[in-house]
Length: 258
Image (cartoon, rainbow, N blue to C red):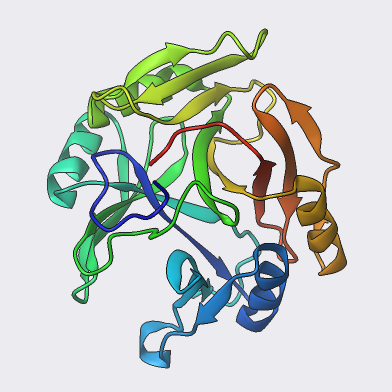
């Protein structure tokens, strides 16, 4: 099922958001690419804006708090029932806390960390806000994968913190890719070892009905994109928004159901 009404199990990617310098331009771009509508938050909460599909929350945009920022990326938040416990497990496994656990009104509790390979990620303990309310359908989150030049420490870290198991992928011959699976066997993403990667980072993939159409929409609305290519799981392309934040679109793409 694509509808989500309760908190996801530990370690499942549950929410994504993006800080950008121009909210209006971002809404125009992402509205054109994904058909999203937007609920702009009040000034006192930083105009944190919910991206909606059929009235359901699927992501968020917000004006970047640093007016001098030049680097923008989609943040991924992994689910937990207890942020404080998961932060403690993370630091024990070599992670670094970038933002200490904090309550977000009555919506939930969060923290931001960096893993030993250098990738940033968030934790989300849902209360009123459980995270993405629609997933695994066109114009919603499908999966998140970590790309890193240093995959060994990353794999050790995520298995220690979230009790994931690792599973190889024979479909991608010649690549250093492992699936991450929850204790129930459910795939939540993967870790790609890429020696040429400039840094470690979690990527975000949105499912679309037509990757070629999504690429055309991105290019027509101020973004750029690679030409779509066929993979064993579907047709994908990397897209860069008008601010330099990248994400992937895929159609149809098999992957972890959340």
